[in-house]
Image (cartoon, rainbow over all chains, first blue to last red; front, side, top):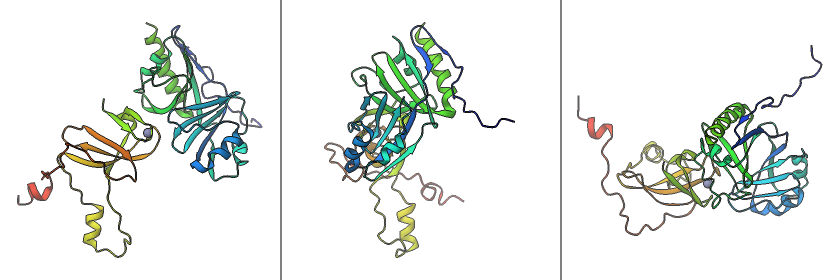
Length: 182
Length: 114
Ligand SMILES: [Zn+2]
């Protein structure tokens, strides 16, 4: 019997996509679901080392850490260097709610000339550069699931979804990427 | 696909991201224990179901998560305006309030049928 349970990556071994849109599993990251009122924003921004964005659909990024606006008092924090975000937020002397969701979510990276089309194959969200420039983010729907789409580059997107939905999201994105490459 | 303007996201989004939340501007009794059963029934269950303009609650459940209010035409499904929760009903110039009440209730259509 194993001495210790081993943690498996939800998308370990998944691969897919096309030359027009590569679909890969994102590496591990820590994540925080943060809720706070306007009066706590400056203290939390200082504690997290990022200016929490206050405009709809905008984000702030620095050194692999991202703060995504999800709602008027809600952010998704992602740290690709796996910093303890909850501990950082706790340093802010301001009323807030911080829930570690590092293992609730996982992410699929979609990159390439047709990356937006691959995502649009199953999402109604408008990804055109005018309304969804680099740095834009939004919670929306993708097929039958809820996702957060984050535009990390001109042709690069990060699609955050819940862990148990990851195979569904990955398969649908891979199919969208194949169709976009035809 | 129907596009609904979210006053918090400040843009039109797909109807798939929203959930309907029933009539808006229903005042909750200040002390619910003081009202009669009939008053409770009226507050809790009875709705006008108008044909035409209606003010409703909506939730951007797969977006920003906020509840907001919207004015919609129940016949054409056209949204006239969306506004944040807590704000008063907006002026809608040129749009007349629903006058013709629907009669699609059991009592009205089937009440006398035996
Ligand atoms: Zn919204």
